[in-house]
Image 1 (cartoon, rainbow, N blue to C red):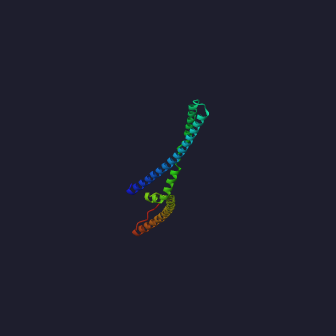
Image 2 (image 1 turned 120 degrees about the horizontal axis):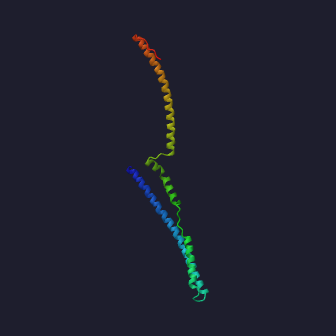
Image 3 (image 1 turned 90 degrees about the horizontal axis):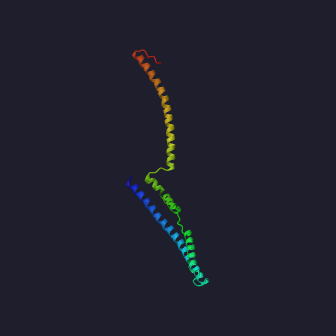
Length: 169
């Protein structure tokens, strides 16, 4: 692996790390805003419940049981609302955009083959295969014709030398 290829890989890895950082920042901010609003809602409901319990019941009666029920109820609501999005669509989209923008450069730098390159090579291979078959057929025809000429020349040479022609089977 050459230094240029190593540099390209490091740049790609750096871009992925930057994208992950921004993705984490977005998801972290979105989930914290939701959690904060849920907590403030529940806090106001709890304080309203405490206020109502203090003013509706006779003194000392049911204050603690009402508060504990409200707190446990709010805890259940909080557990249901705190969710961490696991979707990677944003990150995948950014990586796809980066690869689309840099695809020509990556293909050139890494000497990758594209579908059109492969299709061109397949067409050339088919043409060469047909040409080789045609050349082989023509060579066989020529060989037969050349062999007949050589036999005829050998016969003539034998006559000129005064020898009798050899009988061929």
